[in-house]
Length: 370
Ligand SMILES: Cc1cc2nc3c(=O)[nH]c(=O)nc-3n(C[C@H](O)[C@H](O)[C@H](O)COP(=O)(O)OP(=O)(O)OC[C@H]3O[C@@H](n4cnc5c(N)ncnc54)[C@H](O)[C@@H]3O)c2cc1C
Image (cartoon, rainbow, N blue to C red; front, side, top):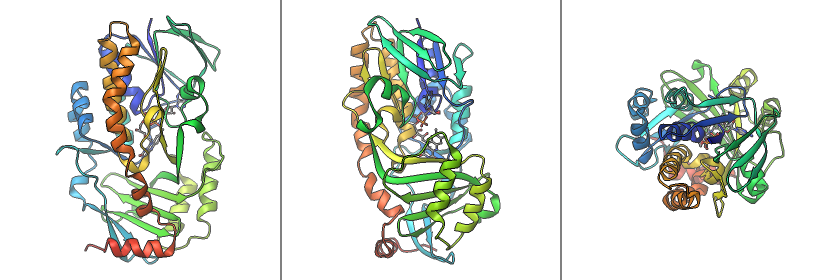
């Protein structure tokens, strides 16, 4: 029998490599028609670097470093006219001296390339039904295919399909933090000097991050949960147009123009996932599906990589006792997850202050650096 992983992103790809390196026969099913390579720069830090070293990809990742070390450690806050009126410290405290920042597409590519030919990838399909028979997990896919596995790993993100099918509805576990974030690549001319800039009006901010090889933009806005189709990009684009239609300062018009043309726009809720248990029978959740710390934490990616490594190691040494393996996985991960999930609301309020007064107070607290 073999292992089925749902989701081919950071958690799923790392798990595929880690399980197959320990002799498992692995199949990865990804709902999208190909790897999803969009997104902003993300951090690989602390123990995740040791995982990368074990996978043999640490040097390759280091070669893709965005050059964050050469930037100033601030996101400059600008006013309507682009004048610097504040500076937010960008960096989280370092987990290790070698912490890396890397574009998400590079990380996805490097993880994918580290996986041997014995792992089977199935794109454009999704699990529709899961039955745990005690000695196996029987799965039926949307395509009509069926399979029987020793273990199902749900690594399918904050809106996890595996979690919904096995643990119940999303609203039991996912906590929307009152913010949506949209990320897109920008034409290079919208960047300027290799720095990051943030512009805020009450409840709505925009961000431009400029890097030698790429410039990206972000729309970050306060909003209660909105019902929309996670798979409908046009609907998400419209949501941003509507939210920013009355915002005119700085480069907002250019950002909205870029959004019209964007081919890699990604929007999601900044959410955390909190669950009492990450496993049930032969099904276990990993990464954002189990313990998303949110966009603001900077730790979703390292936690997903570390979790995949711990899970595969415990599986390989549990002598068939999955309950014991999953228990040890939770024991190892819970304290790290807890640390990553706390402190997030303060970060949110600094990046997207709700009122004019809160914007002014923030700018006074974090005065500009020249
Ligand atoms: C396209 C994209 C862009 C992102 N951009 C950023 C960013 O700019 N900044 C940031 O902080 N975080 C971003 N994230 C989230 C970030 O990748 C995660 O927080 C973190 O790396 C943990 O990864 P994960 O593998 O657990 O979840 P995710 O990276 O969310 O991956 C989940 C994977 O599961 C797949 N999936 C979903 N439903 C199904 C299903 N039914 N069947 C099979 N597969 C399914 C998804 O297509 C995706 O590939 C992005 C995620 C995605 C998918």
